Length: 231
Image 1 (spheres, rainbow, N blue to C red):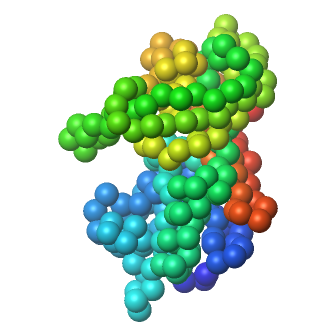
Image 2: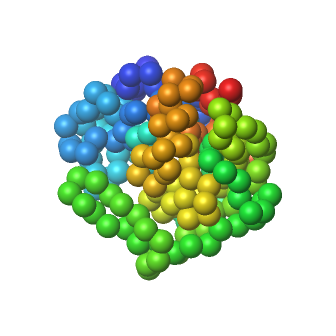
C-alpha cells in the first residue's frame, strides 16, 4: 500500500477482502482522461482505460470498481487483482454491493422516501457528457429524506440516495427531474439558487457525497462529508 501514489488530498479509509477504499476529494477525477498521469486524478499514475486500472509498474495495476464524477466527493473502491475487480463489478451489476450517497437539494421531494425510475439517454458533446431523461438506459434510485431546513430564504433538504443502477450522472438527473436539483450542480441544477447559496455560504461545489460502500457480508467503508457540509 505504501507504493500506491495517492493523488492530492486522497486518503486511505481501509481495506477488507482484497478491496481498498479511498476518500476522493471534490474536484479530482476518478481517473485521467488520457493514458498519461493527471495531477488532478485519484492516483498519480498512468491509466489503462481498457483494463479500467491505474498502471503502477512491474506488471502491477490498481483496478477501479466504479467511478465518481469529478465534483463528487467520497468513497471509491479499488483492488490490485483483476479477478477481484471482476467479482466487484459483478456485485455492482447484481446490486450486491451497496453504495449510499448524501446530497443536499433545493426544494423537497413529493414523498419522504421511495424509488425513482427514469430511463436515461447519454450523449457526448465534445469532451463533456450530458444525460437526459428518456432513452435506452434504465435507471433506478432509492431516496429518503433525512432533514429539511430553510437557509437564506431557500428550502434545502438532505437526501440519502442509493443508486440501484450505475448510470452516468444518474443521481443528479433523477434529483433534477423530481424538482429537487442537487445544490451546486452546474449542469442539471438551478442556476439562480446555486448563485444565491454560493454567495451566502462561501461554498461553490456540488453537494453530493459518496458516504459509504458495503460489501456482501456486511463490511462497510464510510467517510463523513467534508467541512462545510452542515450549516
